[in-house]
Image 1 (cartoon, rainbow, N blue to C red):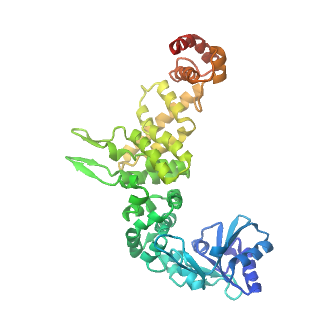
Image 2: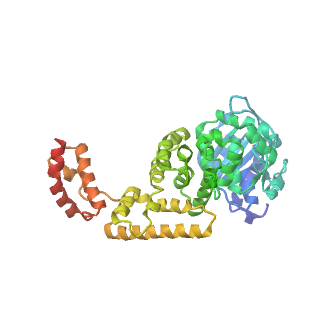
Image 3: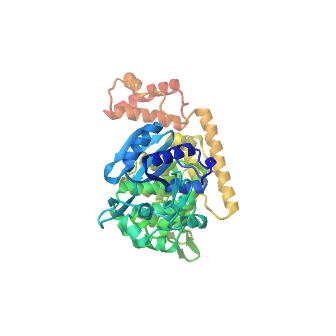
Length: 469
């Protein structure tokens, strides 16, 4: 760990260690930065533990390295600033005690052992000495190095107490499992399940932040399945928990919608980093449990599940306190995700293709990505057939789009021009006239051109205005 080549920013770290020597303070790099360097990963945050007054030391370091910004929390003994692309945080070595009603600790200054023992997991309870005498030496009181080799997530102290003190660590365990592809140690997993109700004291914003981090990793299903196994999902996302279950009647099996959803999310994670699209994949079948029916001779059906899913979505996004764009985006995608498969076959009209292009707009490529990810059959021939079907739809869409310029479609005759031609003011009637023009273009009765739409408006306006009187 002392090799300079291990650290692109080793010059900075050596400087800070030297400042520590000059100030008579022991300083250590701790936590995720040390873990990631051992795993040969790169992070942009560096956390330091200072045996002494961290904010005072941090301010001196910031001046000497010409850092940007300075944020200090005297109560918690922490301070941070930016240096190049790195965020540097300095923490006074401390011991924490918790009350049952809150995850905010009482803090008192302590030593390095106490500070490492308060960390969430052993792989994050590693410290790297950076003073001259200790440079490059790793302090590992809880076996974090062994756990890194075993690819194991385990708490430094009793896991039940660890999760009781700070229940957000329950979600962090699932997040690190998903991020690193690690297993969670059996006792730690059991404690997550035992203490899951404690999550109710955690703010929704913190829960949602951790949940979206799980969703952002290369294989989100690792963390999501852990949340389902520990019954944490019932608390943080009950609609997903409701997807679990397989039923059989006669020779017909009802596929487990949760397992299917996990495959869809993982498939999509291989195609896109777009968190809005990944979230949509997670909730695209959320309405299925409410509409499932068994039809004799047909088997299990889920007619209209996309419409029920859309109705459920607003409450889900509101409860999770997600930004407005999550609802707006997922609403459109869930509503449309069954449409492309309905456009299979040579007999599909240009107007049907136009309608999908207009409704999907700029998200049409994302929609097709979701549809491809939704193919989770274990039968290679069936998968090949479905992919070929979507290739056909893509080809048809390109043909119609090139011919009609339908993407990001709007009426060529805009609202102010409609008002001038018809002698009306702003109001619902303008929207009705514009929609009539758009329908004529989508159905192929007139081309997507201003002059054609203008002429059509002259023909239809009197009838529509008479109906409105």
